[in-house]
Image (tube, helix red, strand yellow):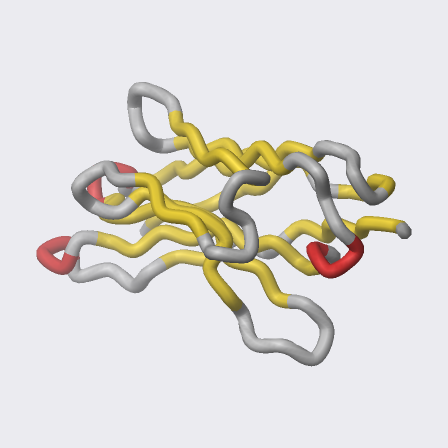
Length: 119
């Protein structure tokens, strides 16, 4: 099992920055892709940014130019730097891991961390 612990989040004014981090533990050798989703009130969960299995960073169109995802050398921690935040970025942000199929494990999700952007 891959366990995820998120850090960061909170209240920020529109236009401001905020960073999140996510630390994986357990069967980290099974990490395939890793990144962040978010869910806003009344909306489906959506991708924010992630590292695909080949190491490529991918971003949601709504966040391009305002967000950067990075990771540590061990590839078990990801960081999300968000800039120029907008009220519509208010959401619960979830770290997730898609595990490698040969591990026979379920994909993992963090508990989520609130990001609230005030106008």
